[in-house]
Image (cartoon, rainbow over all chains, first blue to last red; front, top):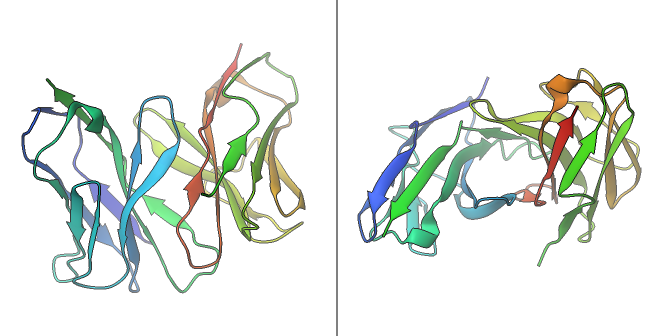
Length: 114
Length: 111
């Protein structure tokens, strides 16, 4: 079945540092890929998405590129802020399924220090 | 904006009680989902529904049931609560072929 693997955290960075959170996937078809973010005490929010190979999703300074050849969707941000401290989840869905089942990675906690 | 509302942010119940967790969405989405989130285990799908009165088991349905009598409301039921059901419960909804939108979660403690 489909699966998502992301780097274990916590990732601790200083403000304005460069962020990379690795995500790789296995899927039988051509999945859509997502990054969700969970701020403390809240539910998950969609951060960005990409639906086909070489697509780049971006939002709030975060970017991720759908790399089919390496089955990866790494999350990057050039300069993190304290307010980016959260748990980040990589996920995929099979676009052929109307039910929109999501397969999640285990989540990566990011802590940004002033 | 899509709004997925879970009835309680925090809930404390006793072992053996029947517990209802309610979720309402205001965007006429076909699909609704219940997950639980536990440290080290990530998010696990309990049940989902792709239409009124329709339900499908997810990865961990044991000890739970669901009800979807109206399109906007999806209820999760713990028939006889046990301490191992202490967790964060997240509801989500989506239209077909579109990303899921999540509620803020219910942190449930079973004593």
